[in-house]
Length: 206
Image (cartoon, rainbow, N blue to C red; front, side, top):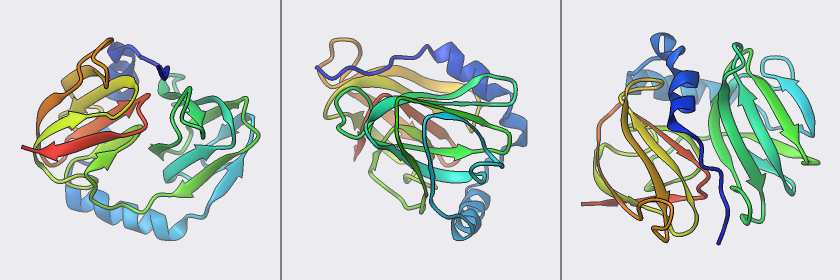
């Protein structure tokens, strides 16, 4: 069975709570800012080592992929974890991609990877989301869904807004060994979805 990182929910809540005041919960504002950033950004390639957002890679939203398999971390200025994943392009021991907002001052640590590609992310409404952070009304339509995954297990969170109060905190597991194999959800505009350790989560309308 595919192995994946199962991270404690308290770590996510603590690491993200400090930024809630500064984050917009307005869907239209988020879309406008993302479109502006996307036009200004270009793909960046980094490798194993330590890097700084704003110096080595511009702040913005990226889809991140690696060449091979290795560890990928992002920490905020206080040292708290923002991303803690195994990047694996074969999708055996980790996830093939991470989609996340990188903010000025974030520190990136890459281990065991010869190349990591940061591709500016073009926002679109989707019915399937991978590892990363997503906003309801921006990345997926608001509505009632059943969330499932085809393979593996990992953490699934829904918060009232970016860094806000946790509404859903589950381990989603395709085989229902370490967690549940499906989750019934009512998603509202502005809520944040965070997925960790899963290549894909499918949202089926109900």
